[in-house]
Structure formats: C-alpha cells, structure tokens
Image: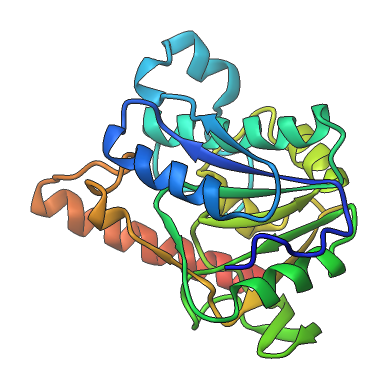
Length: 248
C-alpha cells in the first residue's frame, strides 16, 4: 500500500475500535500504520455500558418507513453512536472528509491505492462514499473511474459499515438526521432518508472483513433458539422486500 498518496483535501482517518475487544487492537494499530493520512483509533461507544436513560435519549422505534421489525440491542445502539462519534470528529476537526473504518477490516487487492485516490479526488462536501466488501452489492451507474476502480451511483445499497469516506457536509447532515434513530446505522443509510447526502459506492471491493479471525462479532448476539432464528429470518425477508419496493 502506498503511504504517500496525493491528498487533495484535509482528510483524517478514524479506526473504530471497542476497547474491551482486545483481540482486535493489533488489527486497529495495523490499519493505523497502513493508511496514507493522519489516523485516530477512535474508542467505540460500548453498548453494554449504556444506561436505560442513555438508550432512551437516542432510540425510538418506528420513526421511518418501512418499519424496522426488530428492537435494537444495546450493542447496535453503541455501534450507531460510534459512527456518530466519527462523524462528529470530522466536523469538530474541520476536515474536508473523513475515512471511517471498522477494526475488523483488511485492505485487500492491488487496487486499494487507486480506488482510495479516486474517492478522494471525486468526493464533494455532501458525499458519502461506501466501500462494500462484497462484489454483488451496491451496483449502479458510473460516476467516475480510474484504472480498474469504478465509483458508481448505486441503485440499492448493501449492508455493512466496514469503510466509508464521508464529506464534511454529509457528516453534518447525518448528525442532524440521526439525533434519534430507530434501526442500525447501516440500514439507516440504506433508507436514503437524508436528501442532502449523495451516496456513492466503490467497485471492485478493495477490503475484506476478517472479524471471524478476531473473535467474531462484537455487535450480534452469538446464540439464539431455532424458532427465534426462523422468526427473525421471516421478518428480515419481509423488511428487505419492503425496502426494495420503496427503492424501485
């Protein structure tokens, strides 16, 4: 990876890391050493440490349509607040943009530098650029390209918050729109309920998720009863259909 990319903007990177997830700390530090801009390892908000009052201050069910069918776990609330914390850092530090990365991500493939440079050269203040880790998500019409890297206007957004480049105005708009929220942060972005924010996506994937090598998820509950799993899958499928119909 090139650590001397041309940075046309005032950009910082934020690696979101939950302090109690000690097995992930070396990867967070590895990311910080690899990225071509100033990096902060940002202490994630620990959802398990949130009080009832903390949760009630930011979380309300059924704010947006389609209705999200699940009640958020405290860990999901903490994850959302961690991304809000990163958006706030972009604004408070007066950055033009911030690269936000979760600590279970590994840069992957020969096109990382080219894709990141394309994103940095293309981003506008109100842009939110996703870096999906799956090739089959976030397909859309071409916005810009450089070599093998393609920046697109996606028709439908995939899930996940592994890596994003967020413009300053986009961070401001996201903070205003999510003072109270009703679903996880990635599904909130999928709604595109913030017209002032333009969402783009980068292809092909230049990152991979390695959480399975670092102790697994720190957000999702690891064990459920079979009937609970079946019920959630049915509700999830119904929600995805409603979301797809909304996006047509």
